[in-house]
Image 1 (tube, helix red, strand yellow):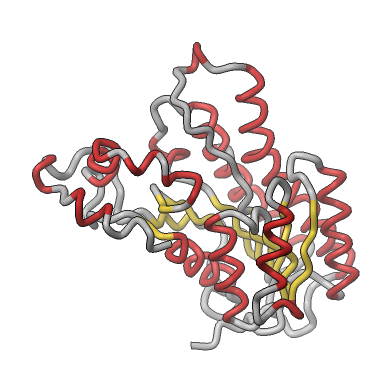
Image 2 (spheres, rainbow, N blue to C red; image 1 turned 135 degrees about the vertical axis):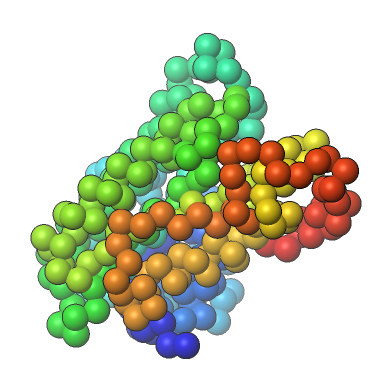
Length: 282
């Protein structure tokens, strides 16, 4: 099925991470042109990109999403390089693995997590909408698209990770507000969010080595398996498509095997060995 994304310009933050790489590859398969932001792993992002068959359609940009001025510069560089930006994926995020109750959380950790996950997403959206304003909407009526990467932690909470949960919950406000703002710039523009549950990436891999953790996660899911980065990426491509999702805006699409905020399975019903056997399937 034609997604309509061929030759569209896609700006992806956090392109060096597990989900970010999968998102990049998924858009590349659609024939898109790619503006890829990285920060801490920027050198690795450049190295990987240079070795891909779509390297001639990609531009790597170094910027910290927590720095609004740096993001403005990166977005404008991408716009000047490609002529415009059609799709933006605000994907960059961090998740400190150490569990801390709120009264144990250090101020600097809270500021960093909220600064990257929530404010970074806001600065990304701000830079994208400014670039869209400068270039104007496409003449073919295929509206611009902005998609945030959220988390089920923002819906259900996450014990020991209040900072992360709050940072992802705040994205609901961005989605519901910006869907009404983007159309002031592009009448067909859309804003949505994909909301992954536990997904097998480098960020979560260590935590998912614990069988108890896997049981705790999967017991709340009708589909007893862990998500893969490609599952998230394909959903983001769908939401970004001006043909497949042209009438979807302000939506949060959860990709978490039907996860609910309650236990659905007894522990003996969880095949931990079988699930762990698929941990390499990103």
